Length: 268
Image (cartoon, rainbow, N blue to C red; front, side):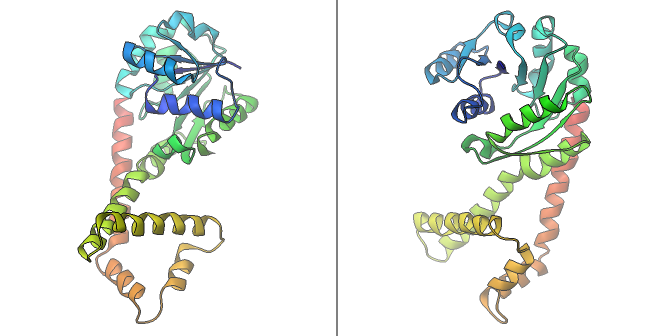
């Protein structure tokens, strides 16, 4: 199985490294198509696959083509590679907002998987939501899920609209977590901790809490109840969050992200 990744940026190179690191593919079976001369040299130095600048030299050779370019470059990319693409090739797109139908028309193919990975994929802790057309076989679907799982976890959705929801939750989600980390770190500094001590306090609290939650069957509310004691410090904080409608604000933020994802989809 030969895999072509079109676009050697952060996500494209992350996929290449993950495939090779996990032994899902070796460096001879991974190809990267990149247009920028400086980037081409950088990718060659990284030794994460064979690097090409000419689509004619690599597109026809691929069994799976992964589109990892910016969505605004999609139309230009389709024009460049359409004549080399074969109907039997499987196309996997990680271009945000670019719909399956747009890819079908742009490349003239029917085997399409649209996926939305997130930033932690760079360290093998990503979350990817993906969907597929009916032409993709069960074997091909399992094959792609195994590839996506090399970057973390992946879940399949039958409704393409859920890709927008995945974008709003897991795609944008890391920024929400960073936002909360930063706010809590700032609060720690205002309480007298140094920058480095505040960083350690907050990051270790987040890491430990996420691991604890992941390794148990308790709900978030059950954990909150365990940490809280009547009249205690945690209860005071949670009451303040509730009074200021923090939960509702977070939900509104996610809904705003979803609305924007849908709008970008209309543009794509």
